[in-house]
Every structure is written in C-alpha cells, then in structure tokens.
Length: 369
Ligand SMILES: *Cc1c(COP(=O)(O)O)cnc(C)c1O
Image 1 (cartoon, rainbow, N blue to C red):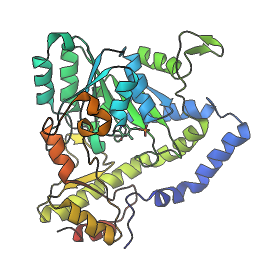
Image 2 (cartoon, rainbow, N blue to C red; image 1 turned 180 degrees about the vertical axis):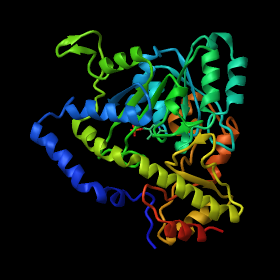
Image 3 (cartoon, rainbow, N blue to C red; image 1 turned 135 degrees about the vertical axis):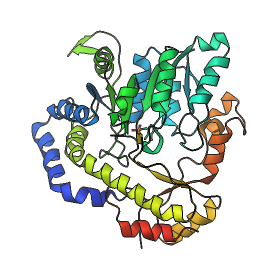
C-alpha cells in the first residue's frame, strides 16, 4: 500500500471548487496586496483560535522575527529556546542580532522543561540575565505541554514569552486556547502544516492590542497611511491570494484536527500493544497532532522497512540545532543537551494528515517490530 507522509490532495479534493472560486475572485478584483480577504481571514482565524487579534504574515519565520522585534529584542540581547526545533525558530533570533541560548527539553513531552528553564534563569550570570529579553517556547508536534508553566516562569521573571505555534493551530490547555498562555503566538501556514496555504504564509496572534497595532505597521513598511511611515518597517505581508485560500480551508480545520486526534488515539492503541512510546492524547494539554511521533531504538531498520513498503516517514528533527554546522560558532558540543540528543536518535514520525484512514494506520503499525 502506498501511504504518503502527508496526503494534501485528499484533503483538498472535497473543497477544490470553492478554493478555485476564491482564487478567481482575487484575480477578478486585481487586489493582490491587502485585499479584503486578508482582513476577513484574520477575523475568521482570530475567532477560530479564540484570540483578540490576528495579523497575517508572509511566513511563520517572519512572524517569529516580528514578534521578537515588537518585543524590543535587539543586538546584544539573549533569547532562550530549545535545540529540538526547526531552524526557523533560531534564525528569527539571529535576524534581530540577538544571541541564542538553548535550554534542554523534558524527555516525555519533547517540549521545553520548566525545571531546566528555572535552573538556567536562577544560575545565570547576572550580566547575561539582564539581557534575556524573550523566551520562545515551541509547541512541538502540535502539543502545548507545559506552556502554562513556562508562561508563569516568564511572567515571574518579566520576560516576553513567544509561543511558536507553527505546528499547533487550535491546540488548547484545560480547554482554553493556547494564545491565553503567551504574550504572542506565531503560526505558519507552510503547505504541510495543519492549516496550509498554497505557498508561504504565517500569522501572529495576541490578546495585546498595542502589540497587534505595532505588528500591523511593522509588517507593512511602518505605514499608518499609504505614504505616511511612522517608522521603518518590513515587508512581511500575507498575499491576498493566500488569505483567500486559507479562508476557505479554515472551515475544514476543526474537522481535520479532530481527525488527527482520533488517528493519534488509534496509533496509540496499535503501538501500546507493541510496547512502543505513545504521546498523550486528549488530556489537560489538547494537542492537535501536526505530527505523530513515536520512538524506536531500532529506528533506522524500522524506517527502511516502512519506506520499502511504500510508507512515507520522517524524523523531526535528526540533528539538534546546537550540533548543526550553522551553529558551530556557538561552541556547543555533543552531551550539552542530552535529552534533545537522545530523542533525535530514536524519534520517528509516522504518516498523519486530516484524512488518513484507519486501514492505513493499521498497515503502518503492522510493519513496526
Ligand atoms: C514550520 C515551522 C516554522 C517556520 O514556518 P515557515 O512558515 O516555514 O516560515 C517555525 N517553527 C516551527 C516549529 C515550524 O514547524
């Protein structure tokens, strides 16, 4: 059986005509920048998330960058994040001129460890501590586990908390939106994400009106009116075309997320019988399973077997950022963040999307030892 890692076609087919119509409307109106669909999508996505303001952005990476900029992060400052994330998280830090400070994750959740963060902040050299301007928590695989605890720590230390929710559209904590547990949340609509555009796009979500207003200006050349610039800004706008497509796709997101959560439960049923690692489903932390990630000591042979049987698999992520060639200058070495390193050697991401079938899940699980 051929089972792609993500089957976008199958998710798009039922809404294809509506998407085609939305694209045609934008072309008919010839309003490609800041068209009415941008505002409409922002309003709809804010309602979906349960947050006051959403600002559409050119990508998830740019959303992280502007979140840091609006937080006043600049050259010489420090920003804390985890080593087991996509490099966009740390690229955004470097784009501001600030320095990256890693803290390790908790083994069970794969997310930032509240205990380790607290130890880092408490034992930090005072000179550096004063320059820590932000923490970026990554809701990895769509799980916000411990984000609430990290938010308490950030507030106690008066540090801006950004939640990199690029994989977590619709995730909750105690049935509350995760946007309640960070000063700023950033989203990516990279095509394969839970809500994906037909190209690059992203968003910032916040309950702070002042932050929202400033981001709106920063993303659009610092504009208040067409040729009045309050400050120098950037070009980080979302395309009208992408907003129009996302507005249509958003109507399916709740259903796709429910399907992902159900599928994760089904994977757990199969894999727990084999004694394999199973991520938590439907507890205090409402994960939306952008990825379903189990663990295997014999990962390489398992992946080989799955690939040979036509199953798309992945590793998110195979090399922790502190050991990437791009960050050699930071001087980290193997052993510095042992949990992230250990996870990178055993994690394996199985096929997951908004329309995968129970038969496909069973086929995948039967191939695992
Ligand atoms: C996808 C992703 C990003 C980057 O988003 P882009 O829209 O591709 O720029 C950032 N952080 C995480 C955790 C991601 O998964």
